[in-house]
Length: 460
Image 1 (cartoon, rainbow, N blue to C red):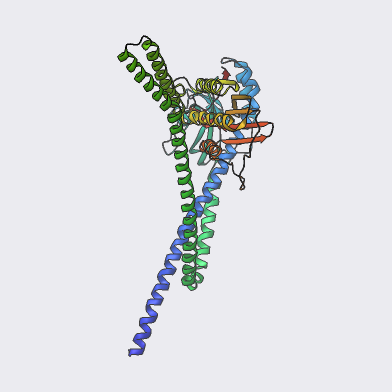
Image 2 (tube, rainbow, N blue to C red; image 1 turned 120 degrees about the vertical axis):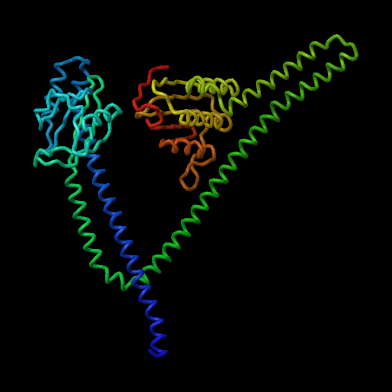
């Protein structure tokens, strides 16, 4: 091999090897992407099955709700009616509803009548899965999904099945229905075969365009990454600045409170004590009155310290709950501002998460602060109620209103944005409607703020 051939080989061989390596890497990545797509496709199908189960379960509960709600715990006639209804609900050769009591005894099974009246708590599928036991556990937990293997009525073969079970607590029943997953796995297998075929077909095409494609993807990814990074950095800077602004605003407020309230009271008390000392040295008779005035000044400073401490974190919120904290907040607000407040609350049997309780309190606190500073209102109405399974805080005033949106459609003002973000943190919302006749603020939180899911508000 002459020098020219060696140079050509040194130039071509690394290029060919690079192309082969890149082609193999792209093919491998395509295979992994295909697998990820298949997994996503399968998850989508399973999610669709889950939604189907939820809809079917809701349909069954709607069908029996009138009888169930009107019946007592030992109403056998109502139970028989419900059994007949559930047995008649049919949605295909493999679609049916089943029911067991919490001890594992079958109540309803239209496809396998031999199970009726027998205890199946220890029944296991071919994988050793205690089917009835886990379905009952899901029902006791408030409803849930469970996957297992079960005989398919239409074919008599054992197939994977996904069921959703809910509890009828009054009767200690587990009500459930399920769908078989063999069609999901069949679709996934067919999709996998198609993807493998496409990968094999396009292998040569990929090998021919690997280098420019990789370079283009690399450059596009680099540009997108840099763009996203710049956006993220900008948002992070904006958030950091907002946090700093909030801290500085709070520090300035506390500084003003200390200077205008506590500092003045302490200086006055110090002057009274100096004056009392001078009176004592001169033998005057009115020393006691001056000392009493100094003590009154110290009491005022102590009250001011307590008020500031209460504003920072009210003890009533942790000790007695949200309603008591709102009563104290509105009472102090009315006493301080002279604005009448009509407060109406409900006591919730379910316990609100401490963070959500604090968020609602801070929204009310910020709203009252804005009303006192800017609204020029003479009356405020606050209503804390249950709404849509969650909680709603309504605050209305008869003030002059304000511009509640900035030029980009977002809530204007740091205080309003903070209130909105507190609600969005829990999946809730903040709605502000304002006009020259007054402002209405609605803060809503979903039912996930409760330690338990069922909400039973009672009048406070």
